[in-house]
Length: 329
View 1 (cartoon, helix red, strand yellow):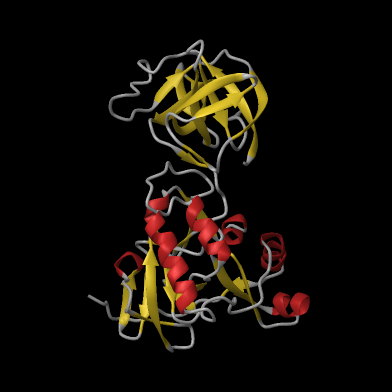
View 2: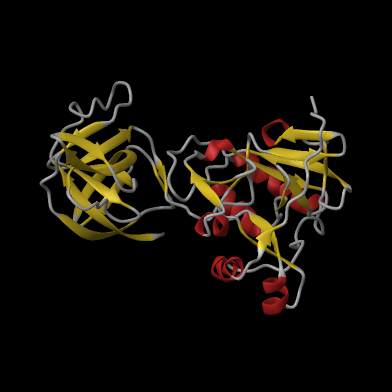
């Protein structure tokens, strides 16, 4: 079972004051509760509404999740500022008191006087290791034009970076509508490609050859956002599509080189963490037995996120191509 260490803050309001059971709203609430670090274990990386957690010798029920943002006073008005952080709302089973768990640390901004809160009665996925997948609205190149990833189906033909066709074996989408959190946020490039943070893209340049002795490497897409070459965009698990092809290939996503799903044990683990259902797990198992030698080896040498940042700082850049001009119906 995973063990978590999170910051915990008492919330002195109520579910009623949050309008928790009606439409989602953003509220400005002052906090006076203390903040401390707590450790606990749970069955996996997902926190379901109604799940009991043992924290500090007490039992706490998961009530919902969302985000919290610092608020400052400007001419007597509370204005949200700074970075939003994920939050899980829990309720003490004995006293009924409410607290917030912060997976990525507490919200903070100079001069803050209140918190801006957006909490819904939904679960939370704490996994940050997503599989290689595209946002559904990201267009992929085909021999006849381009098509949104969300419209791709088994049997369709896509085009790899060398202009060769590849056949789609399956497309998988997470089954659970989990609350968006920073680990699920997509990397959105200037050209419009939307990728999961761990989706690997091609980097090239003199720095790649100097450090690794090869012309190109594959790096996590998150490195582009960290280098200011893309932005992080809040999305949910269901916004992603996993595309498995008959041979592992580097596809063109809005012209950006990006891998197809790498079939193997890590894909199954990552899909499970994103809420894939039993049917998807069976599909992966079936494909793994039918195609034991396909889609299991990375198309290029792999580098870590830290190594990619060094390469980008030294002038390496993602490899891009022009998009096809026709649209696939």
